[in-house]
Amino acid sequence: MSTPPAGVGPLTFTRLRALSFTHSCVYLALLLCAFALGGPQPETFILGLGHGLLWIFMSLVCLAAARLRVVSLRLAVAVAVLGGIGPFFGSYEFIREGRAAERPPANA
Image (cartoon, rainbow, N blue to C red; front, side):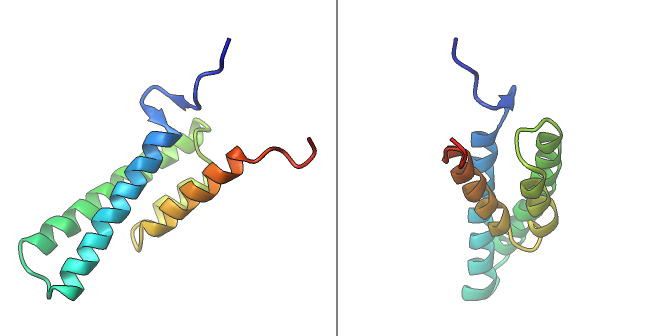
């Protein structure tokens, strides 16, 4: 009997990682729009609103996922605390945690 992937219902590590990378792409588009393109409206507003709403959603979902032990507390804090400044921190933590899960234990 195989073990199911870590997660509870739709709340899985893989889905959260994909959402984190989506959030990072929205934020990158916001930075490019605001600074490289001179802040055209309403594009900058829409991307800023998307970033803000995604950050709130990601924070709540990652904190719930940490309680359910789908992600580590370190990852949840990176998303919730640093994600408002730059969601790249959360995406990096997803990569780091995913690689750590793939490594065999050092004592094996």
